[in-house]
Length: 148
Picture 1 (tube, rainbow, N blue to C red):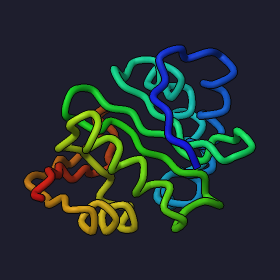
Picture 2: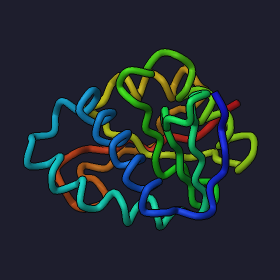
Picture 3: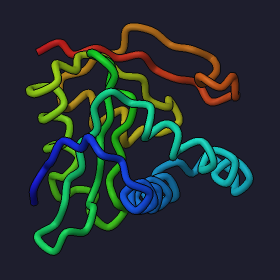
Picture 4: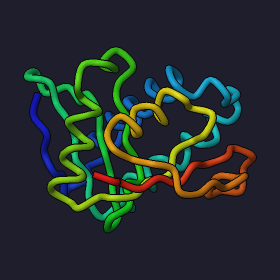
């Protein structure tokens, strides 16, 4: 596996990462309806294009296994292909974001306990909570910061 910082966000790359996003969300966000996934999917390309830093984890054959994006010290996104969960891809991306980019804060859906546990395992603690997500939808967010 190789992790690469990406500057040029080509349509082909964005499409590949959109596929990673969708497979990841379908495996971990069981609180979302099909309508929610379809609606949110429409915003993902803009979100990928809008982060200041983007890294992609790739398999030896070039397939995208996962990706992370950040603005400043805030991790904005981290998604791993459903079939790659538990293989170290997410940990490697998060360590890259912390070590190379200085990431120290993030938000995570409270209704995604696997992600909450992952971030806690990686040294993050909850310091706040919002009743809605950034779009005002009724998906509570936990605000976490790195403690180690």
